[in-house]
Length: 240
Image 1: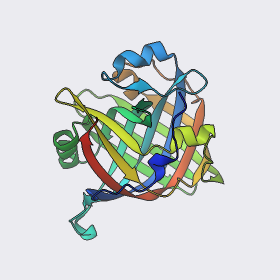
Image 2 (image 1 turned 120 degrees about the vertical axis):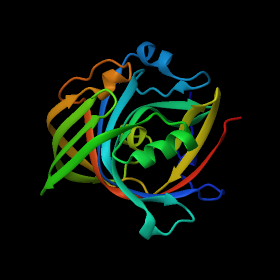
Image 3 (image 1 turned 180 degrees about the vertical axis):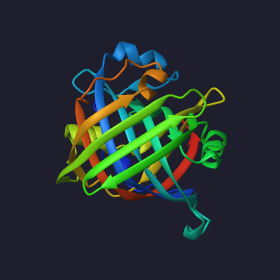
């Protein structure tokens, strides 16, 4: 199916529900047989494949100034977050589906579970940066599922052109979630990621396997990073 990958990048004509910044993102990706990923999706969502493969993303980063649109920036929350995700489409609209999300803020976990029904987990997390070298760790409080990764930021690539593999992996603006048996959709808006190459030196992961997905290999098949973007959040609303 040919999907419109430009329309999601446009700012929607809807009320902004939240504002935030995503900083120091690492995008690690692995391919997986579609038949192993598809059964884990809610009914109604279709896998968005590239080269006939499903793609699993593991994305640790920092969240800054997280707040509803009516709350001043000075009252926003700052915390670390990590998500395990794959790429899907609904009614011709490409987006992302999250298998799990870790957050260092228990308050943010409770709000996201209540408002979005997203699979957030409270975790102990830390990130350290020494020049272009970054170390990131997270341990889930409920079952000790863990991620530890160390990587180096590489050369700048700039925004990913439409139609490239990088655009397929990085430029995702719709998200889909199941809430009380129904599919809901949200949207984020930001400038295209200023992408960089990255090299992962060490990786210990239990988050992907904890989501019921095949365990990841080292090194990751595809790696990018980005200094970050400022984000507007819209929705959620029921899928029709």
